[in-house]
Length: 148
Image 1 (cartoon, rainbow, N blue to C red):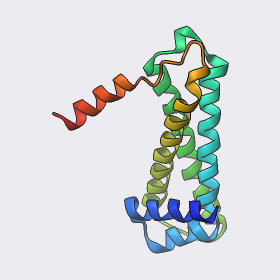
Image 2 (cartoon, rainbow, N blue to C red):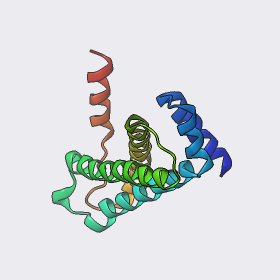
Image 3 (cartoon, rainbow, N blue to C red):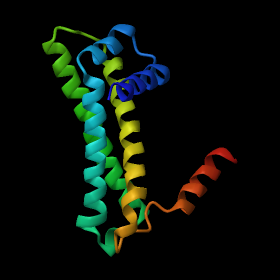
Image 4 (spheres, one colour):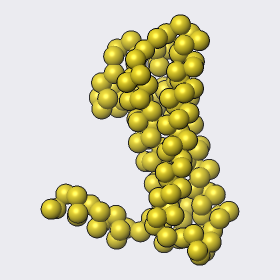
């Protein structure tokens, strides 16, 4: 568990370079582990709902998969931003809005990674939505971004 938290903290510090006090406060109050698990389990929940509860042939397109990912990301970003700001304020730890925004953006990226990985794990047993995410669409997006 501690190795995961250290990895998440180092990734956040490397990519978003927050102020040292903000990152230390996140670590000391165990917010890294809290939001790691929130991202993990919410992504799992959304994937299971998409592939096994909804599981509709009319809701099995790539843009439907992305809409679900968008809802999940907005929910987790909002939760990370507002809840974290509320908890830090209640602990008398005041930081700038940019620090909270960077952390919520980091949580959005982490959430999408979990959503994508869980999609590949659970899509195979779905009857109607088992073609999304489609690797050919992802290849086309990759080519349009990096090969142009």
